[in-house]
Length: 243
Image (tube, rainbow, N blue to C red; front, side):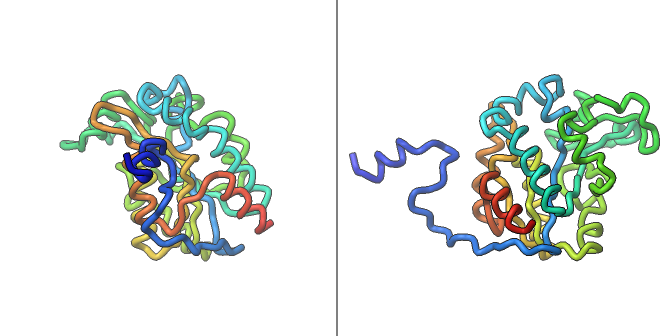
């Protein structure tokens, strides 16, 4: 057995390649140009009572996502870095759609991210659509920007890009849920719109289903597309250097 084959056998599926073919990142954060963008930090993904926990919980736990996302919030707030949330909500009228993709069907059938209406907060508190409780001090501090909801996976249906451009932001630290769906879709759209994007690989997770491992699928594309793929430790260190 060759040495290269032995190394491949000893390497975990999420480990960084020992002999990468792609060039290293040169992304370097700049104060005034950088924001933390968190996708769907909501109960239905991140609470054990959430409707998606049965398929994402193993990955969330494996990558320590809940704690790592909080570390990013805390570091960004301490450094006075803009924090922007792109949430996922479905209202009653969204259940009238005539066709859906595979996971749209699932989300609608399990009432994921459901709210009564855009201007109605009845039943919202501590629901699946609400923020994970430990994140509320960071999100509800009066300074965090919460954009309108994205409706499928990417930010094409909300005002994320507008809010970032109006603040002179062109560097994004991207984290949240879930890896191969909303996070990857946000990464792709932001990249296409000229933003520099660093994805935080251990502050996201994906569903594990018979069809595949969503986190692994996303990780390959993060490496091939994003300007940088960092750990939470690396990202926090870089954020702290801006303080």
